[in-house]
Image (cartoon, rainbow over all chains, first blue to last red; front, side, top):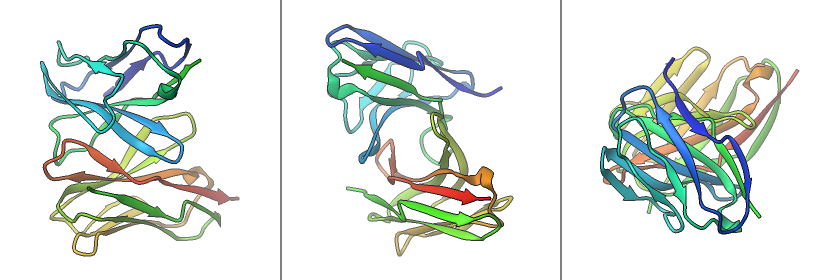
Length: 113
Length: 112
C-alpha cells in the first residue's frame, strides 16, 4: 500500500530537549515536504526536498532542520524545541513537485511544555 | 504572495442536499489546484487535482471546477451523506514556488 508514515504520532516533550520526527514514503517519490498546521494559520510549509541531498527552506523554517540522505526518508529535527513549536506536523511526498497529486502522512501531534 | 481563501468557514446541511464549497486565490500563475479532505485527527486525503490547463475534474459525487482568470475554484458535492462530514481544504501549487498554499478550510457537517 502506498503511504507516507510519520513517527511519533503523538509526543509531549519539554523545552530544549532535542527531538526528531521521522517521515518515510514507499512510493519512490523525489519530492518531500514538511508542513505545520495551526488554528487560524492553516498549513504552512517548513522545509522541502526535491531529491536526495537537495533541501530548501519553506515559509517557516526557524527552529527546524531537515536532512535527505535517502530518497525514502525525510526527518524533521527540532534541535531545541520551544512552546511555539507546539503544532500538528505533516509530511508529504509526490513524484516530482509540479503537476502531481501530493500524498500526506497522518500527522504528528507535538506538544512542547 | 499567493493567498487562498475559503468561504464559508463552516457549513451545516441536511443529508441529501447538493452543496458547493468555494475557494479563491490571488495569483493566477498556478501549476494546479487540489482539493483535500481532512478528518479529525487524520491526515489529508487528496480528492481532486486540477491542472492549470483544465477547467474541471470529476470523481464520483464530487466535481471541482477551476477558473484561473477569476482566481476561483468550486467543489460541488452531490447528494451529500453524513460520511462527507469533514474539513475540506483547497490548495494551490504556484509557479516558481515548490509548495502548496492552503486555504483555511471549510468544516462541513452533514446532518442525518
